[in-house]
Amino acid sequence: MDSRSRILELFRRRDGGFVSGEEISRSLGVSRTAVWKQIRALRQIGYDIEAVTSKGYRLVQAPDRLVGEEIRAALDTAVVGSKVLCFEELKSTNVLACELGDKHEPEGAVVIADRQLAGKGRLGRRWESPAGVNLYASVLLRPAMPPWEAPQLTFVSAVAVAESIAELHGLPARVKWPNDVLIGGRKTAGLLNEMSGELERLNYVVLGIGVNINMEPDHFPSDLRHPPTSLAIEKGASVDRAEFVRFLLQRLDELYALYLDQGFEPVRRRWEACCDLVGQFVEVDQQGRVERGTVRGVDADGALVLDTPGGEARVLAGDVRPVKTGDK
Ligand code: BTN
Image 1 (cartoon, rainbow, N blue to C red):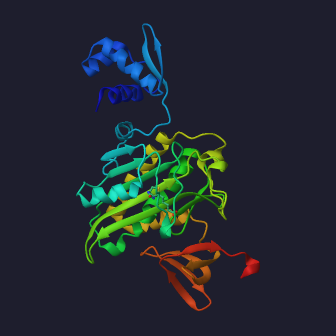
Image 2 (cartoon, rainbow, N blue to C red):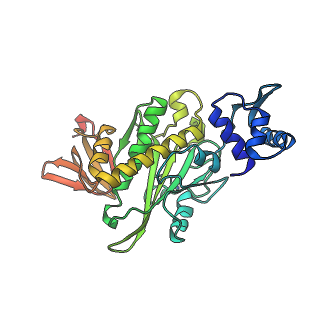
């Protein structure tokens, strides 16, 4: 950890309280003048640090920047966040995380970008990724399991996102099969998981997570049929991105451990608890082939199970939307 990150770590541990110059200089093994220079440098990059004679320094407010060292230092995880790499700009965090996967990077590495130039959405769509407002993250995992079970991990990331939004911000986040998170019916987060493997063997999985955090209505493209939303729009106040990403990575780590230890069932139950679709009449568009029925739930393969006029149907991929009673 560099000197600035270590000073920030001391502030974080003091939780808004003062840390004396003497303490910082002792802990870093540098002179008081060197400490002052680091404090000045932190102020220049946007940290609001109060200095009071005889008390020391106090972090009043951190800028809304995502800094790998800071995120990493605040985590208490077994796997997720073993490394946190933050970039100002990337084509796509998923692309870099897959490259790391190909280069044998150990599991748990997290790639975050402040902005994506070619953010990838599902089905070849684009994911709007402007700078400074949202979270674009990809997590590299190497679970020892066959490739056909990898789609279950989409549910792990969906539950982690929905629970983080609900618990940290008190917003009614709901999951929509297979990989959206909505608030009040409007999309707030999207998940794009990619994997590499052979027929019988999984090399790695990349969980791609995009969360609209501080997007304002005029940031969204105007041609969208279903306008999305963001945490800030729903809360009516801006949201601390660093706090959100720490909470999310922590929750993802817990759910991943639960999944490895006890299998899909407890994750499936948590997912259903965040889902409004069960019992609803829906239609699922599978690239042109439409299936209609009442949602019974999700099975062990992560498939959506429907009661249809022709009997039970399992759907492995597609876009699902509720059908109003009059349209049945
Ligand atoms: C969707 O279409 O709903 C999925 C969107 C996934 C977006 C995230 S942002 C971080 C990661 N990197 C990407 O290029 N895409 C995913």
